Image (cartoon, rainbow, N blue to C red; front, side, top):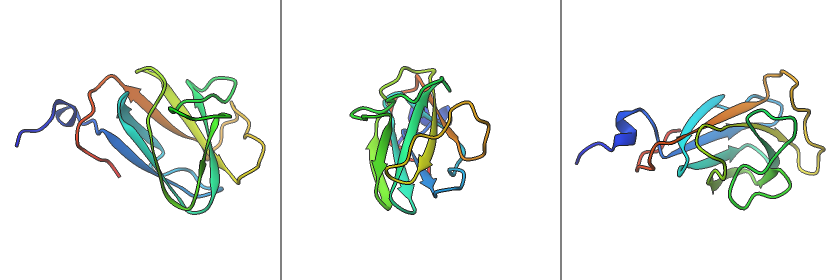
Length: 127
């Protein structure tokens, strides 16, 4: 079996990000192709807020996302497929359910990023 082009470039078709409230996501920085999937492994119920390119407002960055966050239950949630273009950097930050959105632009260690590449979706998975 031959290795996919995405795998040769070090890209994976999906990523699992560990989310624990009041802690930084792990891994902190991620990279997937535009057709890839994001899974959120949450320690508790939470809302994971999203913003495109570190903008001044929270935004819907995944297909089917509403209100600028994805509502997660404990354990694995997803897959979430990016609805933003390749080259976009999605900022994520978790809060307890029903909380106000966190402040954007505030430098803290609770925000993570997902960079969307133009690579093709393969069969690999990065955890």
